[in-house]
Image (tube, rainbow, N blue to C red; front, side, top):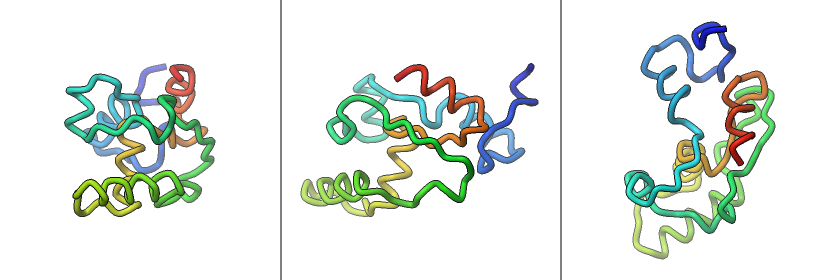
Length: 115
């Protein structure tokens, strides 16, 4: 089965750029310091292991969590701005701190095996 016929998370849609981001980057754990610094260096909030959520649909994905709340507070204490919990949770999803791919998405299983 080729990637274009595999089920993906609903937010990726049919846009080739969004699909490429979904298939290759979003939710993949980042451990390389230089690469992570492009996003922001934050490792201790998930104890070095991605949180493995089991979302059935986009509606189940929260805009924020207690972990993103704590991370947001920590960043503000360090002088960062525009780091509300919703933005921080999106960051956590993007850099693989949390696996929020939908259960029907092929990437959810691939990334869950990487733990």
